[in-house]
Amino acid sequence: MSQRKKSGNQSRDILKVPVHTRWGTLELWATDRGLVRLKFVTGRHSRSRDRKGLKPQRPGPQIKHAENAIKKYFSGKPISFGSLKIDWQDKTAFERHVLHKLSEIGYGHVRTYRDLAGRAGAPKAARAVGSVMRKNPLPIILPCHRVIRSDGSLGGYSGGLKLKKRLLDLEKRVSARRCK
Image (cartoon, rainbow, N blue to C red; front, side, top):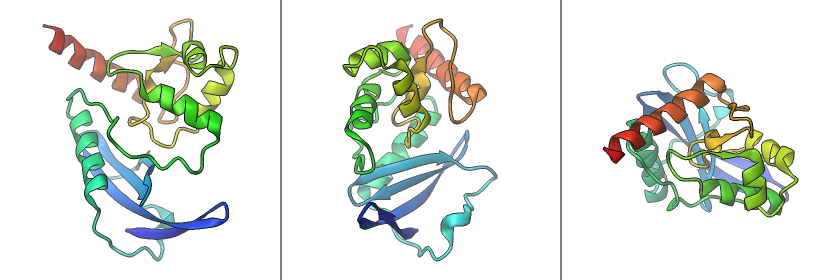
């Protein structure tokens, strides 16, 4: 389905595609520039209120590739989302830089907010990094669940701490199986 959205002085078409996984339904949003949002949808099927006036549209190869990658991830296959195109136009330079560094955290690994801030060239900006994580539009793809507090506690997660723990446990189990 497609919808026209205003972004700054530009309007753009946004395609919304439901992605059904063993963990539930997610909604993937994309423009012609790349992915813009991934969100968990409650209920059996995606029925967001903001769908009024959307027209069915066939997803292109890029969104199909993203959909397949997400399904593989949730089925327990270690996957990198690095080949997916992302539309960064609504992000500040700092947000883009932090999210790029976030995308470099490998499957089954964790980093602290402080470590990520250092990797982004702002070692004293752990709180600012936390704010970027809180607004992360593409959880799983940009793996903010892999970022924890310096004391080893989970910190926060937009999907809730229970989901963050499940995601980390999934990656830990899959990584342990691969090492055997």
